[in-house]
Structures are given as structure tokens and as C-alpha cells.
Length: 343
Length: 129
Image 1 (cartoon, rainbow over the protein chains, first blue to last red):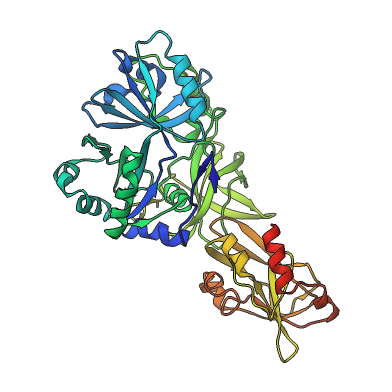
Image 2: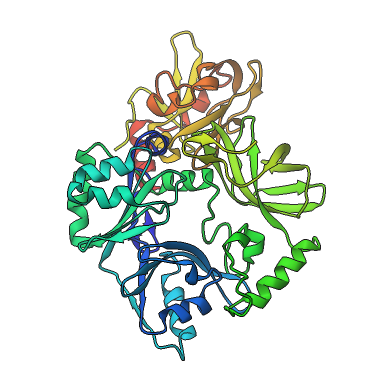
């Protein structure tokens, strides 16, 4: 499939088998399409504190990672990203479909800051996830095993040839390895030889949805406030004297939601036959909403979805091919570490 | 390259039909169709006894990727559906022409069979898509 100019496999064989492999053992995703942007210079920290809704001051040591939204002045989501603190400054990993827009936005908003913003197109990213993932990576990179085993969640370390961190998009333990593209093929082959199975974009989507993680362009975009995309926890309101792009608009959105005027992103489960799909209309006791991501959950064996619906909705139904079917509203976090997570 | 058996007839909407010795027809979806749909997770089948016309929607196939209708290739009465698919819909992926069949039906008008494609024509049809 052509994905924003990259030739990407949706699946290597069965998408469900690839999904189950990650939940039960270990799978590897080639996510080199994602865009790595390094931010250096004497004011890198101040710039990112202005650019991002989350606060990079939380990154207390080299390798520490943070998830954040990057907002526009109206408080819409330009993109979501991971930022790592590095010895040279910071490394961000942004979405590939938004690459050009993000680079322009970062360049425009950095005026007046002493920063160097550099895209790193030669870097590849392999994500290895699953209960056996860390052990498998260590078996392949045994000389770094001690350092890798010490990593806690959302922590990374620079190993010279590559950067490795305990981050990911599946709800399983695992590692993301950022390395020069010319070394990625060899590492990929070694991981496969160690019994890690390749997994495609299809499995990546069902895994992230089970984990209740948003997909940019589906669950939020520039017209959507992070408050209406279940991202409020990623906004650092404190310290109050930190100003960031979109802060006043996001604060206004928070108040608007408290007054019932802004919808919220929730989880939906359909415990009977059928599959919830993106774009299906939701009818609740408080009004209408829409499914932003929906799929069949291979782990739960029924359908799950993320939907934006009026706040404080208690009951809802989905329009599935002309029929109204009752669905249950849950917190948008369906599966963690291979197990059902919601009540 | 998908598997397209020579002894079947095919509809442009990717159903196959086999006329059995007893004059009853078996209907399913082609290997090309199951491959395009990906992992199939639910199949909703009609009640036996349902009378259908050619091109009527008779079943719904839900895969991880998409929902898709199955259209009856001919007119007739549904006399049996494949109960295996209720519990094991993935059978359609593993054996679209064998254990993954959908339904059996009578043939009201044998002339309708002539309007369907043979294996060569269906192969060309898949290539054009």
C-alpha cells in the first residue's frame, strides 16, 4: 500500500495472527516512515516548552520520553508526537502524513529562539513489542543487554550506533530502536532469526486501538481540541507561568466541556456480532456523535471503537447499516498487557 | 495470483457458484475476494427458505478491514447455509471454495447461469480491478 509516499505492508500474512503474535510473544514493525526531527541549540528547551502542550521540563534525565500534542493557536491538534531528551537537546518523532506541515510549523514558531531544527531522514525505526520483545532484542544485541534491561517505561538510552527506548504504540512492553537506515535491514533479519515475527500497519492499528491510543487524522486533527480527544492528561497546565501555543484556546475548551458544550472521546464496546467502523453515527441520550476509529478486537473477540459523543452521555446506540444497535460506553483503554482492561 | 478453479462460474461482485449433480447450486466468495477482505471475523447468513432474485443482497461478510455484501448470483430458494461459518468465519479465508462455502440454493432459471463469467473471464475481470 502507498502510505503518504511510503510503500508499506498492511500485513505480511494474516493481520490477526500478527496482532496475536504481539500480544502473546513478540512482533517487529518497520515504522521508518515516521519522521525524526532533532532539536538542538541553546534554547531548545524553551522552544519546546512553547511549542508543546506537555512540558519537556518533566524530562529529568537523558533518554526520558514524553508524549505530547502540538497545538495551533486555535487549540487544534497540529500533530501528536514523542519527544526524547538527548545529550544534544531533544529528539521528536512525528507522524509521516503530517511531515511537511510539522516541519513548517516548527520552523515558523521557532523564530526568535536560538535553536537548530534538523530532520533526520536517514534514520530507520524498528518497534519490537510483546511480552518476549525485550528478551528477544537483548538476545540479538547481547553486548547492550544490561543497559536495555535497566530501562524503565518511557526511558531510553543512546548506545552510539543507535538509540533504544521503552516506548511504543501497542499496550505491550517493548522497545523502539532508532538507527541508521543502512543498519536496519541487518537488525531486522537478526530479530526474525531470533523468532520475532514481522507485523504490518494493519496489526499496528488494531493493537493501538485496543490500547486506546489515538491515531492522528482519525481521532484528532487540526479542527479538534485535545480536550475533545481524551488528551487532557497530556497537557501540562502547571507551572501557570509557562505559555504554550494554543494554551488559552485549550483552557477555554476545557471550560466549554465542563458546561456540556464540547464532546468527549470515549471507548465503545459492542459485545454482540458486528464491527464498529469509523464514520458510523452514534445516538446518545444527550445527542449525536461519531465513531472516529473502529475495529474488531482480536484479543477480546468483539468490536471496539473510539467515538466522539456529547459529554455525560449514559446510553448510546450505533447506526450500523441502517439498524440501531446498543453499544456500551467505557473508558478508552480496552487491552493492556494482553488482558481485558475495562469493566 | 489468486486461485480460480475452472469448474465454477463467477459474478462480477466476486461470488462463485457451483452446480451440483442434484441440480442444487453452492455459492461462496472467490479466493480473490477473501484475500482482498483480509481476516474475516463475522458472516451473517440468510434463513433457509428465503426466496431471492439474482443480485439480491443475501449475506454480509465483516473482515477486520471492511464490511461487504454477498449478492446472490442467480434467482432461487436458499435451502441450506454453512453453519461452520458462525463459529469459524476464518474458514472462508482458508478454504473459500471448499469448507468456506456460504449457502446452497435451488436454480429458478438456468439461463441466469449463462450470464455469469467462466474462470478465464473472471481472471481478466480481477486483473482489471
